[in-house]
Length: 51
Image 1: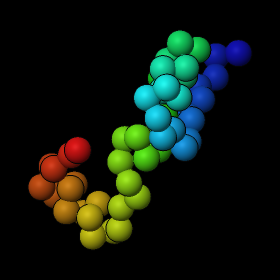
Image 2 (image 1 turned 45 degrees about the vertical axis):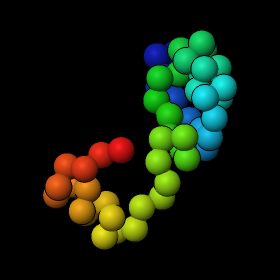
Image 3 (image 1 turned 180 degrees about the horizontal axis):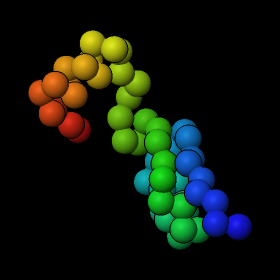
Image 4 (image 1 turned 60 degrees about the vertical axis):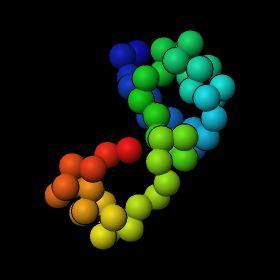
């Protein structure tokens, strides 16, 4: 169908492994980072400080 899927709630390496095995390459969740406040987001954006 040519659709892209964004997976939310990825918390473990195992979940990420299964997603990659099934060709899902776009994901977000606590595995990558915690939710940010506006201030934290702006600070990272301005200072280019990424995890």
